[in-house]
Image 1 (tube, rainbow, N blue to C red):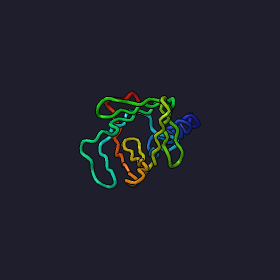
Image 2: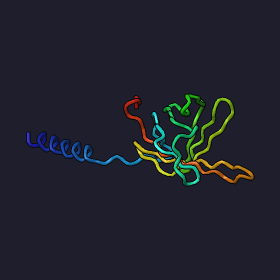
Image 3: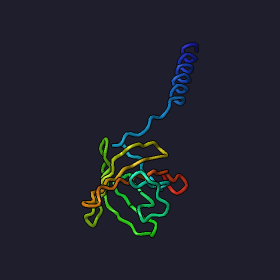
Image 4: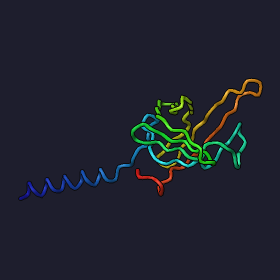
Length: 137
C-alpha cells in the first residue's frame, strides 16, 4: 500500500512540474500558423496610415498561405521559413521575401526590402498580431 502511495505521489509531482513549465517562443522554422493581421506598417521608418500594402497574412500548417491587401486582393501559394527569412511563393510566380525580426505566438515583426533603382531601396516593416478570434489554431 505504501508503494502505491509513493507511486501516486511521484506521478502527482511529475504532473505538477509539467503543468507549470513555461512554453517557449516558436523558432522561425516553426512559424506559428494562423490568421495574422497587420497592426502597423512603417515605410523607411515612417508610419503609414492607409497604404495599399498587405492587410492580412494567413499561414496554414500545411505550408500554404494567403496574403490579402486592404482592397481584398490577394496572393496564394506556399511558404517556407529559415532562421532569418520567411519566403512566400505565390502560385502566379511572385515571390515575397521577409526578414524575420521577431516572432511569438501572438505577435510577429517582418521586414521586406524592395530595391527601387533610382528611387533607392524601400524598407517596409510589418507589425502583426495573430487574430485568435478568427483562427482555428
